[in-house]
Structures are given as C-alpha cells and as structure tokens.
Length: 556
Image 1 (spheres, rainbow, N blue to C red):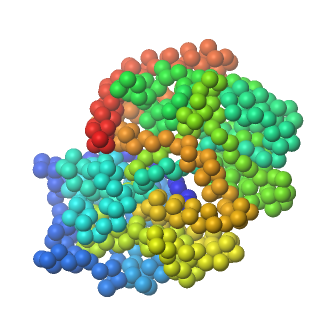
Image 2: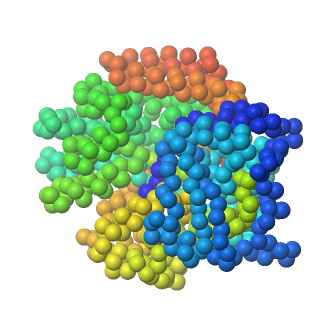
Image 3: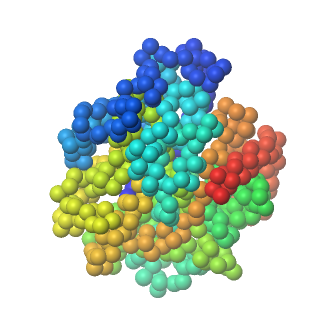
C-alpha cells in the first residue's frame, strides 16, 4: 500500500476569508449566504431517503459527482480508464468527474468559493483550515448517515470519529487511511551488498552508524554513505535515536513542540533535537551525508537508490524506493539489494523504546462533501461502500475474478494464482489506482495483505511486506493525541506559527550546512530560541498545550 504524506501548499484560512468577503457571505450566524447554484442542506437535497429512513441503494440508479483534490501536485486519473474504477462505473453506476487544481490549489479553491461553484467533494488536509469551510456553512454533516451506512463507524471506531468532530459536535470529515493498529514505513534502508562486503558489522548505536559511514566513505568513494533525502530528512529520523518513546514528529516542522510534564515545550531547547542536528552537521562536514541534500529533487534521490549508489538511507518512507531498487539490483546480482535494520539508538537507551516514525488513528487526509452536492447522502453511501471490504478490494486489487476471487470468513480476499504469477500486471493495476484511494481502510488492507503473505514461501513474499512485518510497523509511535495542534493560518497563533517555522527552517539548514563544531550548532539553536520567543513562540506553545489536553480528554 502506498501512502503519500504531502502538506497543503497554502493555508485555506486566508483564501476562504477573502473569498467569503468577495462573495458577499456573512459570518454573523456562521452560515454562508447560498449562491445561486448551491444545493439545499443535506436533509432536503434530494437524497434517496423516505420518512421511514430508507437506505440509498448504490447501483440502483446512476450517481455522478465532482471531485476536487486540494493539492498542487494532485491530478485525478480519469475515472473509468483503469480496471477498478471501470468496474465501479459499470457495476455501481458511479461516475466521478475530476476538478483539477491546475497546479495552483489555493487559487483554484478561492475561485470556486467566490463563484459559488464548489465541487461536490473536496479532498484535503484535515484540521483548522477545514473548520473555516465548516464555519462558513459550506459543508454537509455526516452524523445522520453513520448508522445507515455502517462501514466507517465499524472500521474507524468511536474514538477516531470523536477526534473528527467539529466544535458544533458534528462530523464533517471522512478520513483516509485511518487505523486502529500501527502502520508506516519510516526507518533505515541499508545496501545489502556493501554491508556484507564490509563484514556485516554491528549497526545498532549512533557510534556504530558513524563508524560504518566512515568505512563506506573509505572503501566506496563513489557511494553516498548516508543519503539524507530531501531537506536532510535523515537527520529528522535520527532525532528518534536520542531518547526513548520519542518519534521525530516532535521536532519536525509540522509540530515543533515537545511534550514534557504535561506541557508543550520549545523544540530549540530539546536535547534530542539539538544532539541530532549537531550529529547531522558533523556528518555533513565530514562528507558522510550527501552534500546536495537541501537542493536535490526527489527524482535524484530515487535514481541513487535504484542504482545502488547509497549505503544507508533514512527516511519517513524508504520502502517505496527501496522495493524498486531491491528488485532491480537483485535481478542483476542475487547478492545485491536492500535490507532494513532496527532503529539506531544512543548508547544506553532501550532499543525497543526507539520509534523512528509515527502513526495516528485519523490517518492522512479527509474528504468533505459540500452543500453544492445535489445528493450528499448518495455520495456518503458511495464513500462508505468504498471504505468497506468490497470497495477496498476493488480499488486496491482490481475487479473480482482477476487477482482475487471471493472472500474468506473474515471478508479477506482470496487471491488468485495470477496475483503471484502476474506481478507486473498486478503492480501496474495497483499503481493506476493509487490516486483514487481517497478513503483507505488501513486495518482491512494491511490485515488482508499480511494474511495472504503468511501463506507464501519466503522467496515469494514481497520485500516491502517482509520489512513492514519485521521492523517498521513495530517501530512506529502512536501520536493520535497530537493531531490537530496546528492553529488556523489567519489566527494570532497561526501567524506566530508561520514566523517560528521560518526561524526553524533557517537555523536547521544553517546549523547542518555551516556549523564548524557542536558548540556552533548549539549557539545557533540558542539564538533561534531567542528569536522565536520574540515573535510569540510561548503563546503558540500554550495553544498547542491546550489542544493536546483537549485531545487527551477525548481519547479517555
């Protein structure tokens, strides 16, 4: 299963505020003035529901709705051109019409809001910015649908749904890749051939890693000892090595707040973060970390990995390129390829309490249904089917009868021989639907995949699934309590957050690229702390603390 984790390129907050003013909307009662093309509210919008509460029957009649992915990078594949969506189109009578961002998502959404021509469904990041749409009266609540269409409620669970509730107590967001069990791919990828040729030395502690990278540099001058990815992501991952029960999320740009004694505290004063930056600067100075990590495109990272020109790669999802590289390298040389190792830790720490990555129950992003939808209940019914077992089987592995045929007593797919014999065709199909997986059900997909893999001999098991089951899923930290800490972009705290992020990005790059010693790194971080406090960092930390405590109360 492939997952993308991309942030919105621009906050919705400012553009919605401007758009509401331009379109003549009023916020006096938290409702937007309806446009000429806006549909009525959910209860009166033409949903196939009688006074007795009949359930909408998917496939009984044609259903068409527009879908907009609010990302600069996202282009929805044409519905019906792949085998999976073609089967849905023919058997469920559903047609999804893509609305493109044109590479400028912020401008596109702003234009749609001003014109009153919102798409039926918006796929976007959850949190404070979605609340802007909700408070403006643009979204349809799902509460009355949850009992009638039970898949989301069954698979997500009450605690996840409660975390999605808006201040008015209702649910407007349909989550994607939500989960109740660990998942994720963060960790360390190691070039197997180089590792074995160097005697397969112990690679457990920070010192072990440092000594290994020095040995690689000496013996393999044309190989990058530690591939940092883009923006030295490897150093983020390494911050997890300096403390127990501490995922790199705490000191990442997306959070920049470290929980301590019931409060959110400064990342710039956090010892694990400071030590990891100092170590990163040392690796950069000694050319053990690739020198272009802050400037290289993602394609360049992939090229180095698939050609075996790296010794170690640490990233939030190294398995994606690792699986491709392993297959290509192994095909040329059975001794080549990639392995993964247990997370690196500082000497003296418990290796079983080191977590390179993180997951949360809410998963990745969300779909919201706007009040422009003529039949919001029908759309919800489709999304609920899609997140259920049959919908997940089709959108992940194609129509029945090809790579799976029937299910077992737990509704897991019964994969056909073609699933393992036609790996090229299977992978092409799965890749064709990656950008149509809007309501992914992590538990169903992962458990189905693992159940099947357990029946295969070792030489037929997928490389990615092997390392997920042995290492990565066991070393991801549950960070559900830390979701939704980001303030709205146009709030006081949101403006402070933007300033602190700029300070963070600047000092992190300066420290790694320019610092000549650990002392210089720490001096730069101390100055960054002072600068952050001047722009109101303490107020932002207080806001994050309050949100964190609210989350803890909801999770009780």
